[in-house]
Length: 369
Image 1 (cartoon, rainbow, N blue to C red):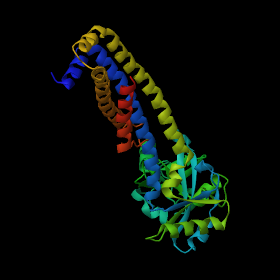
Image 2: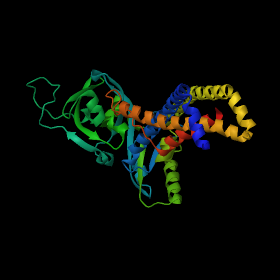
Image 3: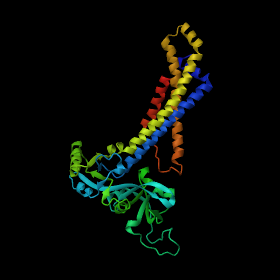
Image 4: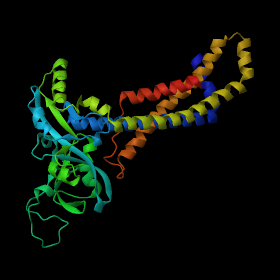
C-alpha cells in the first residue's frame, strides 16, 4: 500500500470524527474567505468610483484619515486645473443622507456640479420626462419643470431598493426632490448612492463652498518625477492639502482599514475554533493509536515516517476543508449578494489573494494541529 493511500485510509476508517473535523475547519475557512472577500470587494468597489472617472489624484485635507471628515475649499479645483500637467479637476462633496419616507437611512450622497465632466461617466438608464407629472403629485396637478436645486439622480440599486422611477419624487429633509434620472456606475458602491447638485448638498449640510475632496485627472503619459512635481505644486497651494494617488487614497481610508481589520478579527476567532477541533482530532488519533504506532516502530518505521503519517492526515483534512470552505463561502455570498436587503451594499471580490489565504491558513492549522 502506498504511503498516501494509507493516510487516506486512516481518515476514512474514522468517518464521523473526520467528517466533524472537516465541517468545523471548513466553516472557519469559509468565514475567513467570505469576510476577506467582502472587505476586498468594498475596497475594490470604492476604487472603481475613481477608476470610472480615470482619476489619478485625490486631494483632501491633511490629517483627515476619515475621508468623510475631510474638508477642502471647492474653489481650489479651478486653481489646481491651472497647474501644468493637470488635465481637469472637480470638487466632490460626500455625505450620508436619508430618504425618510422610504425608510432608507445612511445613503451615500455625492454633491457634484451637474455640468462637470464627472457626470459624463455615468450611464443614465432612465431619464425623467420633463412634460410628465411626478407620481407623488395628486391627480390633476399641473406639470411643472422641477427647480434646479430640487433634483436628484439615484443609483440603479438604490432606485430598485426604494421602488421609484425617473420622474418620481423623494423626500430629503422633508423637502420633495424630483428624480431626474437613474444611473448605472461600474462601482457597486455608487449604484447604491444618489447625486445632488453640489450647491444643494452644500446648503443641506451647512458646508457652503466646501467639498470633501477634489478629483484630479492628469495628462498622459506621465513619469514618476512629473507626478511628484504635480503633487508638490498642489500641496503648495495650501499647506493643509494632501494629494494622493487614487489607490493610496483608498487603501489609507479609515473605513477600508476597519473593514479589513474586522474581517481578520472575526476570521481569527473562527480559525481558532476550527483549529481546536483539528487539534482535538489529531490528539485523540495519536492517543488511540499508541499500539498501532508502537507496532509500526517495531517493524522498522523511523520516527520521521510516523510523524509524517500524522502530519499527512492533518494536512489532508485541512486541504479538503479549505476546498469545501471556499465553495461554501462562494455560495453563501452569492445568495447574500442577491438578497433584496443587501443588494448593492456588498460586492464580494474573490481575488486570488483571498483564495490563497484560505489554503495557506488551512495548511498552517493542519501543521499546528
